[in-house]
Length: 134
Image (cartoon, rainbow, N blue to C red; front, side, top):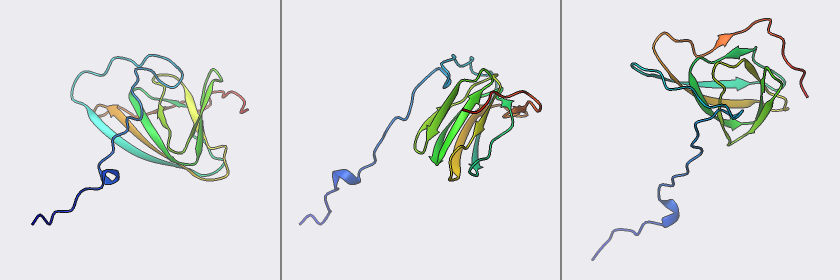
């Protein structure tokens, strides 16, 4: 007698591709990947309601998933993209921008950087004028 339980198909491992792209959120082609030994970095960002990062740029390719809340990314040219909980984001590379939580609840963002040892994940641009928020 076979006592093994049948697997419920709904309980199987599910695979959902969240994105596949060669462009950042603003439509710009990502640069060629760095040569040499990679260093992969994962960072959790917590944005309280109404808070923002300072202007910065990323010298390395990075992408993420917004786990909670809502986050708006604003480029120096004034273009912006709002990401909602459960959505992915492919960041700009070598372009000045900042992220802002315009919502009333905290936003939690997980970012993954494809870097190399001793490279900064971001470079601050203190004093850089920012476009007005909409």
